[in-house]
Amino acid sequence: MDLLTREFQTISYISGPILFLEKVRKVSMGEMVSVILSPGDEKRGQVLKITERHAIIQVLEGTSNIDTLRAKVRLGGEVAKIGVSVEMLGRILNGAGEPRDGYPPIIPEKRMEITGFPINPVSRDKPSDFIQTGISSIDGLNTLVRGQKLPIFSGAGLPANEIAAQIVRQASIRQAHDEKGGEGRQFAVVFGAMGITSREAFYFMKGFEETGVMDRTVLFINLADDPTIERLFTPRIALTAAEYLAFELDMDILVVLTDMANYCDALREIGSVREEIPGRRGYPGYMYTDLATIYERAGRIRGKRGSITLLPILTMPDDDITHPIPDLTGYITEGQIVLSRQLWKKDIYPPVDVLPSLSRLMNLGIGGGKTREDHRNLSDQLYSLYAKGRDVRKLSTIVGEEGLNELDKKYMNFVNEFEKRFIGQGEVNRTIEETLSIGWGLLKLMPKSTLTRIRKDFIERYYGTDISNQA
Image (cartoon, rainbow, N blue to C red; front, side, top):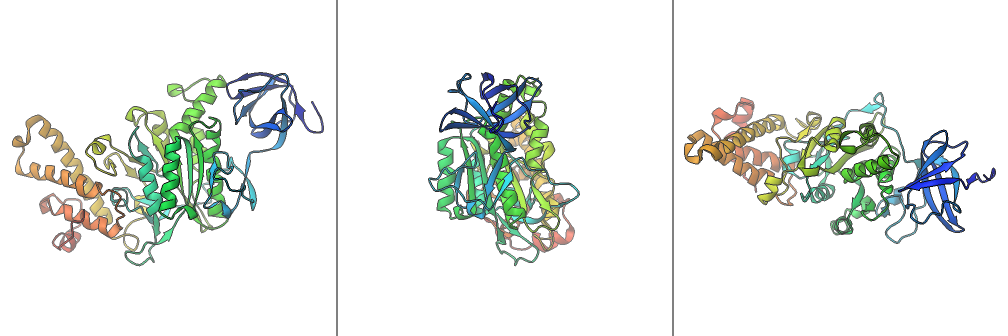
């Protein structure tokens, strides 16, 4: 050991991306290190665990060409940090926060630890203000609220990335003082991608540039062929950038993280290398806590004008919503948007299955002055009729449509029209007023006697009027 530089040449062995260093003193958990292969050739690493014999270090760039006899490890003396600046907006960075777009490194205004801290419940302000995504199945029935954590549960091959990109393009904050039909304030966007393909990365970059949102977006991209370890850093680096922009520069930030399933798989891989006792389906037993340290960094803080609204995207293996990744995510976050393979097969976009979808904070962002006073009642009624209609559709597969009575046939017609006109909208950007109008137009397909979840004065005001049935 070199006492001045704190360099060690005591690597005992290597396992996957993990390096075991012996006879180490005065080392800290999370401390960053440099693995020196030769003069001018270094790799970055981080201390994962400290035992009586070893310091266990994860190497970000992989361990394939490390010689255990010649390589040295230099302790950095500080935990992982990233330089943050407003100049990040418009930039494309890798999963470790380094430039991927060919431009010079960002000159930081401040350096912040990427581990961060969940927002203290005492200082946390409750989410408020309606976020208009332009997607009726979200705005009308599962409303997103400023400061909320609302994940998108997808399946392999479903268009979760396309929906996320559409929300990034269209999302705006509608406050009570916004004029009717106004677009409200725009978000700055922090986009963190983990383990995506080059094709997916190109889709996001090209899409954001063509639609003019790139100048208010910062992309952190970890590709599928990038080091697995880097995926554990990417969401934390993205949220650190978001915290700086939101809570120090008073911006409203929309954070999109895709795909959290890739993050959890990386967590499982590292846990296996460390020989940890696995939990459900081989994932670490601490995965709930680990995910919470990411998700709970979103929200609003009392006395701060900025906010972080989080949209994590995760792919459910085998479309199984009880899989540990969506299951634990659902406990931590405030609802979920679930995509349907059946709707996607019917060529309905966006294929949002509204029955298992949920926004627990919806009531904080809707109502008089925010959207419209009939919003809650209309949402409940549409949900009720659609659920009943889905039951009738299942019944028709047994008895046939000839076995249905006239009211059941109206329910069947309602379900088909609801999926076609309300859920299915393509890439059209709808205002909340258009969404509510389409909802009332669909209610006119049903007898008034079936409208049991809506106030009579709303029925008198909206049901009998000539409401446009927009596609």
